Image 1: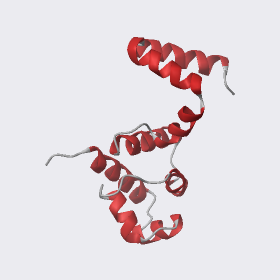
Image 2 (image 1 turned 135 degrees about the vertical axis):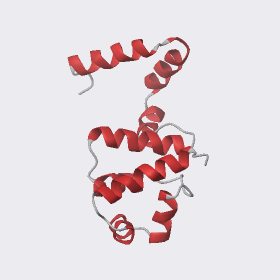
Image 3 (image 1 turned 30 degrees about the vertical axis):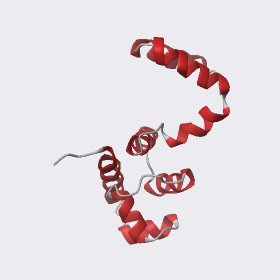
Length: 126
């Protein structure tokens, strides 16, 4: 079976919901949607999910910071887009867009690691 990005996101979401032992109907109720809609998200049939709903899901699942990042990365991959928690920031910040365009052509994985280390070490952008 060929698993696509939508299914990967849905499977991740389902595994996290099961881990916190929330039945699908209750999860849907907690985040304010119908169970069928939530089931469609977990099964990969829905990917254009509003950021606000994604945030409610993250909160209900009590995800760790790493799992939150994975969740948003997979949500973006599912719709062939940037992670939805970053798009607003990128759209509002011209310098972020400029930096990403430069990096797209020139930055290596090691360059990004150094950049991230520098920001974390010096607490830049607090």
